[in-house]
Every structure is written in structure tokens, then in C-alpha cells.
Length: 159
Image (cartoon, rainbow, N blue to C red):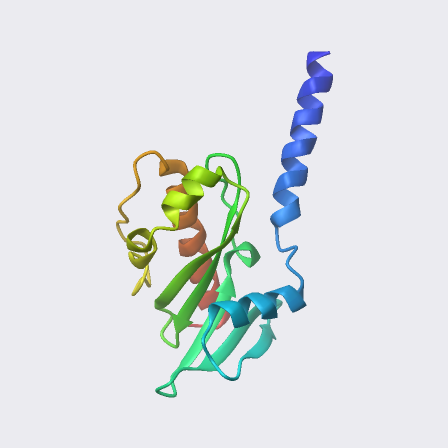
């Protein structure tokens, strides 16, 4: 009986992880990009099987938008948190936004605090990020997700 319960538990965990893993359709990706970005014209692009949106900001600078689930899926306390990330042409983070999460709602609510997410602005390589007491695992998962996504995206577009 224990083996059956363990097998069912493993299947449920595998299903919940794979359900978020890049299951965002291209249409939903574009919709998320439009809702996250204040720009008149956004281009949806793929390069080496990596999808991203790009647009020019008010000053004419090229900006990229990526979704973390295309690059990284670390699990927080109970699940994956999906982050929208805007980067400039040098690969530095301009903004981050929690798009969705399968993690504990009370922990995600804490992680959505502006001061926590603003720590990633200007990020280009690993840096010390202050965690939120009581939501440490969720914070660490978001941090890893952003770090891995930025690193992998920058490698793909040859920064």
C-alpha cells in the first residue's frame, strides 16, 4: 500500500511540475508580454528555439521580455512561480513581475512586495538578494528562476 501511495505522489508531483513547464502558448506569451509592458509595438520573436518579445522603449532603446518558465522552474515551498522579466540590450534586468504561481498563496503575496522584486533591477549576474522571513523558499526559487533565465537568455542571444 505504501508503494502505491508513493507512486501516486510521485506522479502528482511530476504532473504539477510539467503542467507549468513552458505550457504557456505563444498566444498567451504575447498576451502576458502586452499586459506586462507599456509599449505601442511589441514583436514576438524566436531564436534558437527561445521565444521572447522585443520592443523599443520611449528613448528608442531595445528591450526584451522573457518568461522564466521557458528557462527555469525551481520549486519554492510548494510549487513553481513564473516571472516576467524585462532586460535591456546589455542583458541587465529592467523589471520583474510575478505572472503566476503554484506556490503557497501567502508566501507569493509576500514575494510580490515591490521592495523584494526591485532588488533585481540592474541585475546582470548573481548578487546578494535579501530574503523575506517566512517565505524564504519561495524567495530563493524566484531568485534562482530570475538568475537562470537571465543567464540562459543572454547566452542564447550571445551577450
